[in-house]
Length: 279
Length: 294
Image 1 (cartoon, one colour):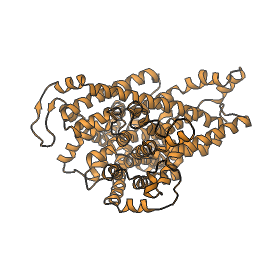
Image 2 (spheres, helix red, strand yellow):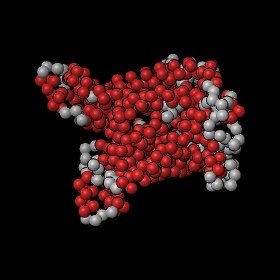
Image 3 (cartoon, helix red, strand yellow):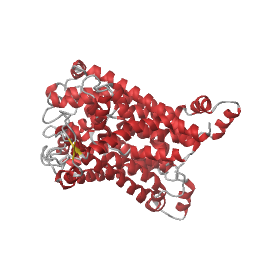
C-alpha cells in the first residue's frame, strides 16, 4: 500500500464520486461525437444543438465510406503505419542495444542527438523532404510517407528500447557467448526473446505515431498515398461543414486504435511511463 | 571485431537513416534560408545573404507568432500539469481501486490530433456549439452565443488549447502516477508519525521527490505543444485575424500559401534554434541532472 493512499471510507467515497464525474466530463466530447455521427443531417447543425439524435441512422457511415478515396485512404493509412512500424523497429532495436550494452562514447553522442531530433518541428523536416522524395522518384508514395513518419517515431523507439534493454542482465548475453553464440546471434536468439514485451510496446507507439500523423501526410501526399487524416481535414473545405460525415469518418478512424488500446492497455501504460520515470 | 566496432555497426543503420532523412533535410532547409526562389517554376536560386533573417526579425507577423507560440505552450502545459497532478494524486489516494479510471484515462491519448481538433471545433462552433449551449442551460452565460470561442481573437488561443489539454492531460497523469508509486512508503509513514498532514507531505516530500519525473513530463509536453500544428489547422487555420497563427502555421503558410521558401526557411530555422535553446534551458532549470548516469 502506498503511503499516500487514503484509508478513511468517507474520503475514499468522495474521491470515487469526484473521479466518476471527471470521467464523465472527460468522455463527453467523444461520446457526443459518437451520437452526432448517428444523427440525420438537419440535426447535426441544429440550433440549439441536442445531445441525442431523435432518429438514429447509419447514413453518415454509408456516405463516408462511399465518398471517393475514403476506403483507399484507409488502406493507405494501414500500409503506411505498418511500413513505418517495421522500419522503426528494424532501425531502433540494434541501435538501442548498442547504446545500452556497449556504452561507447559514440553511443552516448548518438542517443543524445536522437533526443535533439525529437525536438525538431515536423514542418522543418517535412518541407525539404518534399524535394528529397521528388528527387528519389518517390513522391506521393506510402513508403516515402512512412519514412518521413519514422523520423518522428525512431528517436522515441530508440529511447524506449534502450530502457527495455537496460533491464536485461548482461549475464544473460555472457552466458550465451560462453555457449558459443556470436554477438549477433546472442542478440537475436537470447536477448530479443526476453524483450518481446518491450518490442511490442515500441511497435504500438511507432504505429500510433504513423496512424495519427497529419502534417507529413499533408505535405508529402497528393493523390495515390493520401491517408485518412488528410481526407478528414479535406471534408471541411470540400463539402462545407458536413458534420455527420466527418464525425462518422472520425469514429471509424478511431476504432482501430481504441481496439488496440483495449487489447494492450497494460503495455501502453508501461511504455508511456517507463522512459520518463526511469529518466 | 572489437566490441567498439560491433557497436558502431549496430548503430550504423539508424544513424544513416537519421542523417539522410533528418540531418540532410535540415541542412537543405537552413541553406534555403540564404536564398530566394520561386518554388512553383523551380526558378534559379538567388543568394541573398541574411536578407531573409533580417525580414524575419523585423516582421511583426513573426514576432506575434513567436509570442503566441510561447503563450499557447504555457497555457497548455500549465493546465495539463495542474489537472494531471490533481488527478494523479486522486488516483494514488484510491490505490489499486483506481484502475478502472486509469484505463478510461488512456483513451484520449490514442485519438488522432486531427480528430480531436475537429471534434472540439464542433463542440465550440458559433451558434450551434454544444459547449455554449450547456453553459447557457446551466445559467453560466447569458446567451448561447455569448462566447465566440473560435471567432473572438481574444479567446481563440484558449479555445485551440482545449483539444491539446483534453488529449494529453492523461499523459501527465499517468507519468506522475507512476512516479508517485515509486515514493517509498516508509518515508511518508515517518513524516506522518512526526505529525505532518497531507498538504505538508505534498509540498515537503512528494513534489521534491517527484522533481525528475515532473521535469521530464513538462519538457516532453512543452516541446510537443510548441510544435502543435494539426489541431490548430483544423480548428481555426490560424484565424480569426491571425490570433491563433503559431510558428508552425506561420512557417507552413509562408512556405505553401505565400510560396516564399527562403523566408519560410529563415523563420523555421529561428524557430528551431529557439526550441533547442528553450529545451536546454528547461533541462538545466528544472531537471538539474545530477551525478546519475543518464
